[in-house]
Length: 109
Image (cartoon, rainbow, N blue to C red; front, side, top):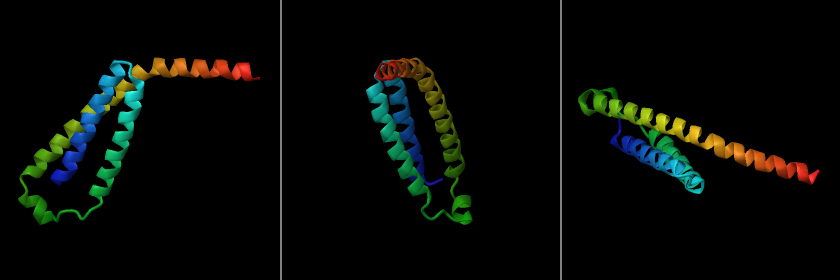
């Protein structure tokens, strides 16, 4: 695995952890801001991943590739756990927002 790609995964993980901290604090504006940063990082990761791939000989010669793949897998698991908790924390907030918008709709008709 290209070390640059692993750097992107690590940055996404940090942003995900920051989003979780903001969600736990109820700072939803910060969550939204950090979500935008994640979207940008993911886009950059996709672009970097489309660059020429190493050859099979390069991969065989690189003993760090297996360790990098394991690291990527651990990072992805932590991002998914963070995302699940953020979603769980957001549900009551989103319901409150839906209720407020529903109240507005009733007053408009």
